[in-house]
Image 1 (tube, rainbow, N blue to C red):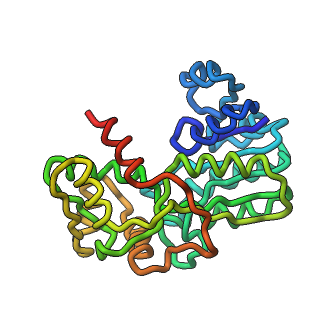
Image 2 (tube, helix red, strand yellow):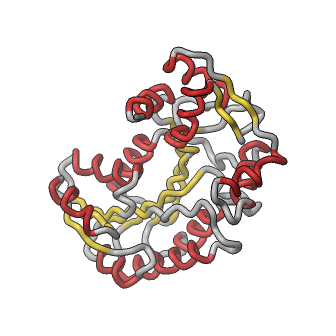
Length: 285
């Protein structure tokens, strides 16, 4: 049995679908009982637990051969990341109690960076869960291609991609969530010893200029990437509802300055940016 957290999201759902396609038993760990019927119809067991309830998580993980762990995203964390630290502590306690044979954790490119930024939440996850007694793999994924969904409306309506990644000619590693899910499902089935890190990116790195060019081809119009000056970032993020914009700003600095990068040679996924964008555009109203 494979217990999957975050199954309602893109990556967790991809992990579950990959395992189910191989005829393997899956336990969907859900916080919302209303989503249970859909996963039961796919053949999953269901366990209800919120990610801050260590006792419920331990029950959800009990008897699992392997567990896939995905932290709830917090894009506007308070200083010191208190909410995320509480979730990590609960996860560690639950995994120690349930004692699965192995654990696969979704992490991020740049988790080894020493400068505090938004991704430091996953640095802390690796530090704490890396001390568990069972084998643990940290799957450090590149920037999700699906994050470009926020650029589609501006490209379609105004021919602009407003980019905080800059210069706009600089390519960074990106990856499709379907490739992340497929590799995570593979890792869940593979025995190993101790702690290991696996890094994953797409078949080619992507710059904002390349993103604009691909969108232009798909939309049959001119699209250009326009860098947002750094002095405007804080006001822009606060206008979008952020109360604590500095961690996100420092993450963007890390990509732009090159200190958020892979630690080792990354595995290459198969899904291209154009394939992801086609799917995203087809889903737009």
